[in-house]
Amino acid sequence: MNPNSSDNPAPYRILCIQLKQLGDVLMTTPAIRALANHYPNSQIDFLTQKPSNCFYQHSPHINRVYAVNWRLVELWPLLRRIRKERYDLLIDFSGSSKTAHFAWLSGIPKRIGLASRKKSWCFTDALQFPEEIDYQAARKLSLLGALGIESVDSSLDFFVAPEAKRNFDEKSRDWGMNDNPLFAVSPVSKHDYKVWSAERYAEICDRLVERYHGQVFFLIGPGEKHFAESVSARMKQASLPIVDDLNLYEVACLLDLAAAYIGNDNGLMHISVARKRPTFAIFGRHSPRRWVAPMPLHRGIEYDPGCKSNCVYPACELECLDGISIEYAWQSLTDFLATHAQLEN
Image 1 (cartoon, helix red, strand yellow):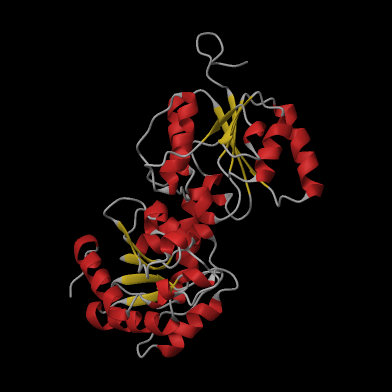
Image 2: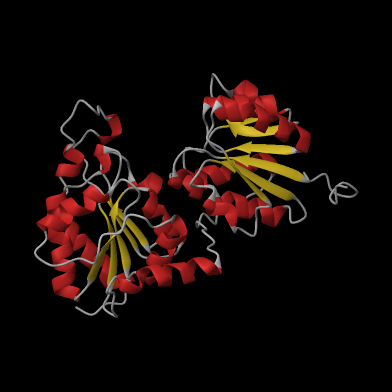
């Protein structure tokens, strides 16, 4: 029985959708929190893809997580299951054609999503992001305006189960970490327009060791070990062992120990933001205004050669990345650490 139905027309069963990358899913957490606070008696379920499902596996705001590969062989059984659940409300945060069509086929009576010429017909409420809002999490949060929900809290969440910390402690026992400041350095991305050079990262890492007596841990994902090895090979100082088998819960546990995250614009950066760690990111093609939380604890640096507002990638030499010099990055980083990390020079 719908506990909201007698006095309040609030939806009882809500399905939210966000596919694609780690950061995209983490960007929905402020909206999910606001939705749960506004409808405390409602059941909220979340549809996403692996490994991003772990972001909601232990969330107090989510009842059930659907993790799909989005292949046709899986979608039809999933769609039948969704229709049987008889949801009252669907919110599609993805903005893709495939999720919009899925929303329409779901038969859910109220469907909120992004307006576009090709997809608006799939939704009962198709909205545009407000032009005055830059940060992507705040933009996704604005979709709740269709429900009369207003929130300005765009901070990210990532809830980690207690056993994850025990597993991490066991795994990290032989890494040789000590009480010196730990820097989680992430020189990785699958997009070349996000990857600052290994030579420059090596110089920054050496300076972190020399100035702060720091420990450098390369924060990477599966198949990304070559990024860390390329930086490590160019360093004069030693880093901690390169580990490429951390799950996302263990990444969060590592970040909890770190004085700061330093790295590219990638999904691991958003995990650092969600764990409320000082986060310093180097941006190429994209703008920090869209992807870095507008809070003092998080900072993105960039260089605009004059074409970022009219990007012609891949017909360029990625001057936006090449223009970020070691000295500019180092000065920006030390200023940031002096304010937001508890370090001694």
